[in-house]
Image (cartoon, rainbow, N blue to C red; front, side, top):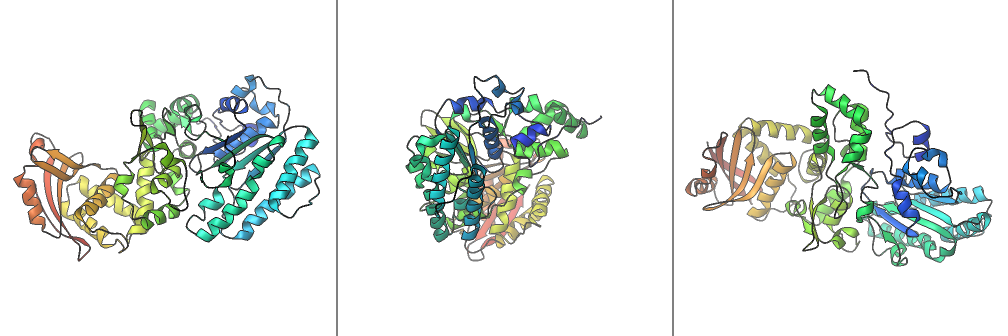
Length: 519
């Protein structure tokens, strides 16, 4: 099949460059109508690489009156005079913020750029005072309210969340800079901030009582990311190419794309959202990979999970109220909020009666990446060996090689550091459950039978593993329980071979020290 030359915007975050360069663009301009006729102050929180920068760039082009870029899009039909507004775009996305000087230089560079553009003399040393002067002077010179767009407003905070001194330093600097949003209100048309987290104690939020946090609002839920309809309307050629390559129908290919990259929800009634970064990559390169996961690292996440000795099993199947997910408190960082805000967890459903969200891992990409990136922080595996470990374990379980995969699990537990606690049977069971679930196995825990509960039940195409775990006892005792309570009975007519495995974990040796099995 001859390939149509579609330009997918890989790494392109400028709306103007995207439109002039003939790149594929999924129309999100209908949200501009809601924003310009709504609040004066907005905040949008989404995971990294989810299209926040592109949306801000779209806002910039819109307020600068560049109507020619919107031809054929929803915004072109809006009742809007297209008179240009002055736009101040503060981009914190590019900095690493490990050194104070880096922050100072970045802010100075951007302030200087605006001062030179509008011919403003620098009369103040303080960045906050310079910013206030720029806002007021630009508004007076143009006769228009200033539009202020801040990309990743919280990047200095997120990058220093485990360094209290640095965090407080940047919090004070940002609070001083952002305080102008309130004090300069008469000169402002719109403020729109994006970021990963809403830090509740930062004065930019406590000072602006009327800020609209649209992160959990249904009508803005799909402002970033790709919906099912947007996929079918905009990616027909790419889907057809993938289907031809993998010898599947287009419908089967959509199922594969959905399993790998779909599954995000950001509000009570949010449609299914695809990760835009990974979706564009798979279309451009015509191959499946964990693109989003591989584009970043989980150091922050791993350190926080280890620091709090978090129960991963509970976290990846959690329920909570919305306020748990809305922000991060530096004095008591919630691992659940961190996992949600960084995109490792998403909303699975909303319980209207109890007013709580049910959370879970969005898709296969995140599930595999979560395991591959976090496991090296807890074990002797490295990023180079974890991939091999996963696929060897899958092969051994799918082929019924019990001793082989149990030895692999034994070596995994032996590599866990002493700061990871396994003081009781439940913790060991949780760890095994997480390993099986994150590598994509069909796994259940505490499965009820007529005479008890199975600790772990793992299903493959040809085998069904019933696992009973003991702590500082014996593997034989565990297997005897499987037989005595007839745990295999419900699957007596199942076509798969049923294998019972009794396992003992030794707290002294800190590893699985024995197992016995019966087919």
